[in-house]
Length: 279
Image (cartoon, rainbow, N blue to C red):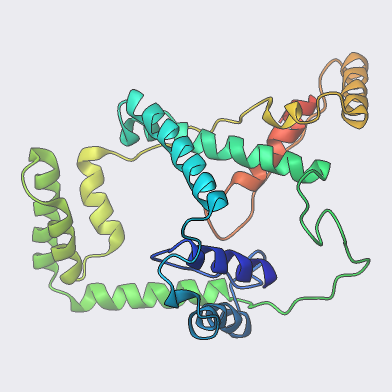
């Protein structure tokens, strides 16, 4: 709650055009009504009580803020130029460049946290001996799935199937010929109650489906521990294991979650791979 308040206030100071405040329990589950209300009220308090939005640029003229802004702009421009050299964003995505940059940054950040260089209050400093249980929102995934299937069946039963088929065919044809507005045709299909999956399938017939390359970065995490005695001790133990067993120790990293974020698992894999494990 405290961090989100500070982050939201910083965003307002910066003149953000869109603001989202995370609920306190989103790291472990979907937000409860209680936590969602706190997150929403954080924005309302900033809007109604602080007076910050009454000034267009509260930090105007501040050397610190202007300097930091320039640093961000300069670094962003370097990344933009790198992407342009690769042929643009679509080409960069195909080569996995943005994904690798994000994972590299995340690994460096996690290494700084693990070493205590970056303080996360309650995580790597000022921990409690005992954490109270947190009431979280429990979702019956089976019931939700069954409900969605029934809803989908109802839509397909009551819609004009011929009109939907014609709209999807038009979408596939536009993708094939390059003539027509794909967004407009997708909206038309959706208005006829075509599903997102059906619209995607209509485009996939021509474009195929993008398959991301899963690559694990190496050396980034370990570089932060260069010269660290404990880190060197771990590597020595791994070398001894390899000599005794004829192979390096192995570790299986599995990710479980409700979303597509896999950086946590990647960082774990990166740290153990840098130490000498087979992942």
